[in-house]
Image 1 (tube, one colour):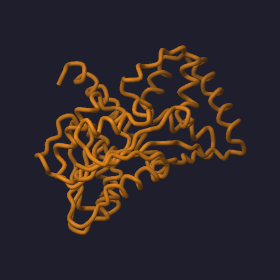
Image 2 (tube, one colour):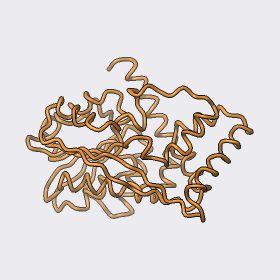
Image 3 (tube, one colour):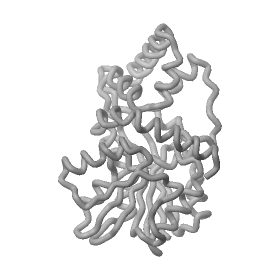
Image 4 (cartoon, helix red, strand yellow):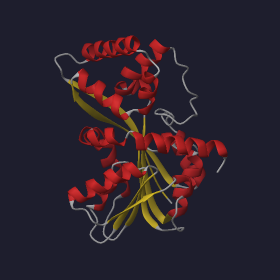
Length: 281
């Protein structure tokens, strides 16, 4: 692996481990928000019977755990770069009584599995952060059996995801941050329609299809929204750590104004759009 990619990988691993307590705290809200995307992934790969399925960048365990519950004799291998996220996934599996799962911390660019191992691969909201997306897609293609199914979800454009831009745009505006390169790992890197379908086709996949869906993030209040975003979103926390107390409070109050203008009466339910890309080997 090139040195630059290795550096990004290590930074991401440290970040996901650091913010794993926040993801555990807000797991219920996030899973509800992501449910339409997870359901579409599951419908696309159609898990059944004795299938052996790989769930990549699974974080706290979804959609892998839901898939495992649908299998009569099969199993799901749940992977993530961060050990601490997989610890939460293990806890969730235990709570739900799901035993037909295995957990493995690994780098998606070097999946530790033989060729033609899995009947299907799922990946919910991981691709945007993979340094080399084509390399990752080729790895997923490699470990899939011939005819195997794959489905992933990535975020649509910023204009369709106010739940990110409400705080992110306010931080950038106040702190005059230079936006990252569109090609750098980040939330909206995969948002251009057709980008991921092209990558899938380059990797050798067939019958590639793209579908846009909407989820709803139910925060209730601006305060809850602020707490959630500053406990799970590493880029926002990193930016705010460089702000003094006055600037941080200014940003917070402007975010509250934005949220309350759009969602009065403490009814903060924010739409978020994502693309689901499905294909077969």
